[in-house]
Length: 120
Image 1: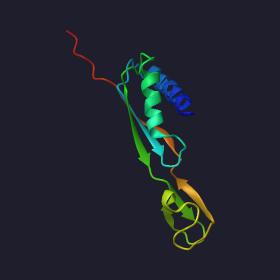
Image 2 (image 1 turned 120 degrees about the vertical axis):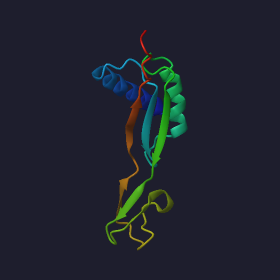
Image 3 (image 1 turned 180 degrees about the horizontal axis):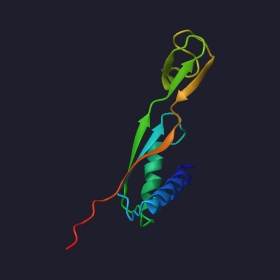
Image 4 (image 1 turned 30 degrees about the horizontal axis):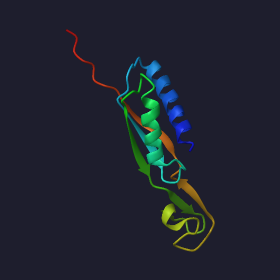
């Protein structure tokens, strides 16, 4: 399970962004995860809950995972198609001269911080 390592990497990135922006707490992070990225979403969120509880910056923060569909391009007919449904063989022309356009991404899309409480 490499998801725990991925979570530690996310937390390091969040710490860097927080330091650059004088942020002391993060309440939510949105991750975009490609459909064929090899990261299993529920393992990722389970690892997040465990690791986030041990870090003051993200303790109690929610992780939201958005799935990005995998799309493959066919070099012979020039069309795109859903990768998971058809794999490497183009459903339009039967060619195997294809490549993945998108769907293996792993991105931090959004970081939310709690609203400041009024002083006074």
